[in-house]
Image (cartoon, rainbow, N blue to C red; front, side, top):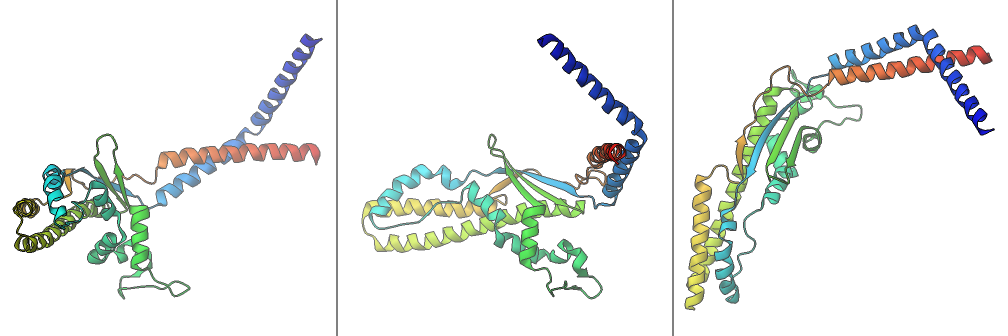
Length: 294
C-alpha cells in the first residue's frame, strides 16, 4: 500500500509542476515585459543618481617616544611620587588619537575653518544671495547638522586589528574634494596632537623646574632632572616630527571620474530584473486565479 501511495504523490507533484510551467509559458510575454520595466526603471534611476567617489589614506600609528621611555619614567617616577611630584598621564595612545579624529569638536573646527556647510548642504544654499534657504519650519543647516552628516555618511575610520594600520576613508560627490579632505584631516590631527603634546610638556617642565628648586633631597633632584630631560626631548621630537601621531603610508589621490563607488549600476540593474520578474510572475498568477474563480 505504501508504494502506490508514493507513486501517486510523485505523479501529483509532477502534474503540479507541469501546470506551473505551462502557466509561466503562457504568461511569458507578460513576465518579460515586467522584467524589462524593472530593469529599465532601476537602471535609469542609477544613471540619474549623483556619483559618489571614495578616497583613502593609509596610516601607521607612530610609536610614542614616551612609551619608549616607559622604563625610565617608571623608575624615576616612583622616586618623584614619594616626594609628592605627580606628572599625571603619559602621551596619548593610538586609540585616543583616533577618538580625537572622530570627535565632535575636531570635526566642527574642520567644517567651520573650511567653510564646508554650503558644500555639504548645497541644495539648501542660495549661491546668489550667499545664504541658506529656510525649510517649511524656518530651519537652516547648522554646524551640528554638518558634523552629523560628516560622521555618518562622509568619513569612516577603520583599524586593522592584525597590522594596527588605520584607514581613513572619505566618500563624496567631488573626487577632488574627497582626496583633499582626507589628506587635510590627517595633517590637522597630527598638527593638533603635536601642539597639544608640546603644550603639556611645557607645563610639566615648568612644574618640574619648580619642584627642582624646592626639593633638596639628592635622589629626588636626580629623578626630577631625568624627568625634565624626557620632557625636553619630547618637545624637541614634536618640533621636528610633522607626522606626530600618524605616519602616512599611502596618501589619498583623486579617483578617476569613472571610478565612483555608488551607484552600482550593474547591481541595481540586476535588482530591477529580479523585482520585475517577481511582479510579472505575481501578475500572471493573479490573472490566472481571477480567470478560474471569476
